[in-house]
Image 1: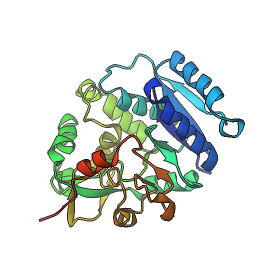
Image 2: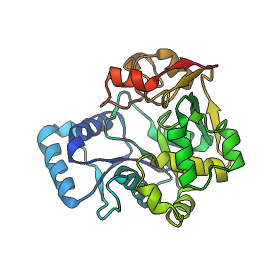
Image 3: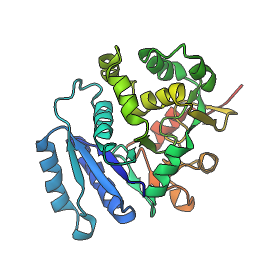
Amino acid sequence: MHKVCTIVPTHQAKFNHALDFLRTHNKFVTTDLFFSFSSYQEEEIFRKLVETELDDNQRKDFCSLILNGLMYNRGIVTQKKLYSVNELVKTYDYVAVFDDETIFVKPFDTLTAYKEIADSKVFKSNRRNNHLYHLIGVAEKMNLSTNQRLIEETDNFTQYWWFNDICVYDAKYFPEFFKWLTTHPNFQSMMSDFICFDYLIYSLWLICFKDFKLEKKMQQFTFGAGAIETNYCDDTISEEFKSYADRNINHENIEHIKVQIMLDRSKEFLDDAANKQTYG
């Protein structure tokens, strides 16, 4: 049996979201859950909140990772995610990473889903109409912006896929990737740069070196970011992508959506960020 787990980096300002994540995870999911903290003091505060805010049925135990001494506050979330995954792939085959502004909304077989996502070797992408800020910037930091395979697969960096499904890390590839990353001459620069998001770095590396591909969706449109992360209520987008994770408020009526993401973002913010336009 393939072992899977879920990891959520959190901090005190987001503990209200982390409590909701824990409550819904314990309702709908049976596999292991970790929270990643920056100090033992943070963990203690959160565990006390769990004791006071959740009832016995919601309070099923979770595991903790303490990652103190990380390098840069500006990139601390990316660092917490990557260093947490590096610890967990020593034990688990597949590790899914979520932000804490997330809830589970239906019973979810994570054992099957995480393996399916990782083994597909594809990332679901959409056209992005302000792509230069993120994708090329990250690729340049990685010294991969002239990689021909990457240029071709991303249609010259016009595709985007972050948060278009659950971010799952595979223990078959992660140790090699992490060694490549931490010995890269620009490693410190990447870790201190806000745009160098963890899963973008990982997925770009997989495309360049492990023959991963993009599954290009809804190419008749462009979006201001990932189509799924900015999808407030468009069921057509949800049906086209068929992702386990989605922002769509209509998730109850769409069976494949098991996780609702980006709960800290308002309809107005998401509509502006989506910036959906007809392409061409």
